[in-house]
Image (cartoon, rainbow, N blue to C red; front, side):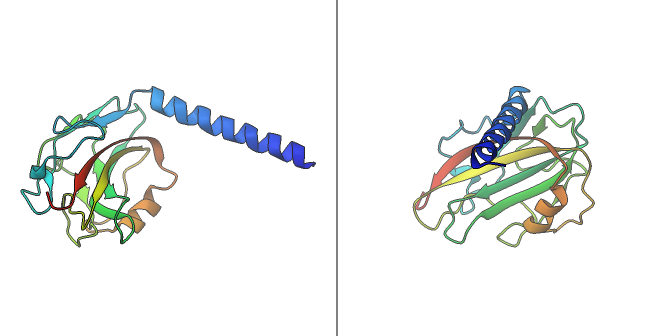
Length: 175
């Protein structure tokens, strides 16, 4: 196979991946919060050194074939590498709201980067960081014990994600 054919093949694969990605986004699956707008500053109430309460989350248009949902909140700007603030899985697929400061019944929480089994809010050591709230629709529940860490959760979810959605807010040190 010539280099030109290989390039065409890779271009085709890339276009198929892009089309699949767009199709995923077009189903309307989404997560948001009334606490702040996409990309806006997260109110101090939700920060680690303040009230440290999780914001209300609203989930819409979960795919019909989802068997569970998984939530990961993390900070990709941490100088220590990706810092995980909250891990929750086996959320019922019919969940449309996670109340402020609450975890849905029967959902399981994992160990965050602070070492806790709970939400721990923004706490950047310096500068302004982004905090992503990612919800994944899975084709099965995950058979993981409470307290499982991020690496094991990521591994268990691999191959089971049928749709993903996210939003983010920012928070600055010294707030």
